[in-house]
Length: 149
Image (cartoon, rainbow, N blue to C red; front, top):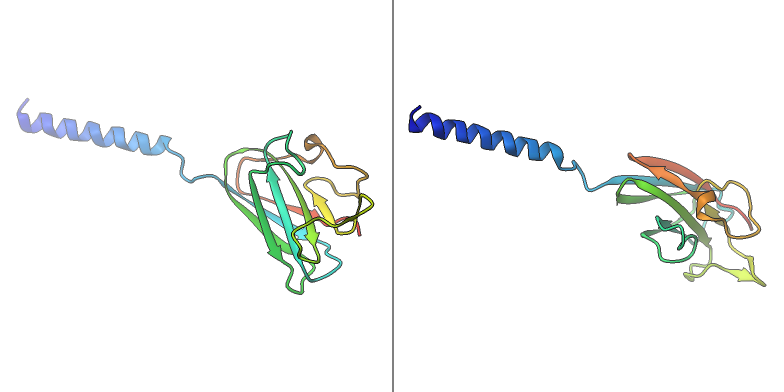
């Protein structure tokens, strides 16, 4: 074999290795999660949501991502969480009707509407992660109805 042939074979091997590495690399940083929040009784204020992947932190501890979207005269909003690795998650959210960045309560009872992923009925206490969990292994969409007052 000539030097020219060896160089050509080397180049082809390098191209093949690079192509194999490109196939092994993830195509994107992660998945997106679209959350449709429905049933606001008022059309002012902001829907605030927290996304959890830690069962111990759910529903009001350290979250992995958060989002806030104003209602602007509507009774529903869409929140989008991006670049999520595949995994198990849960969401807690509330309608901050007075836009004071606090979940309103009176004597421990909610003054503002709230919601949790998977939970579709009013609750008397905070749900456990196990009750609100869902899986993300592709781009995913879910709906969470606002509950309570």
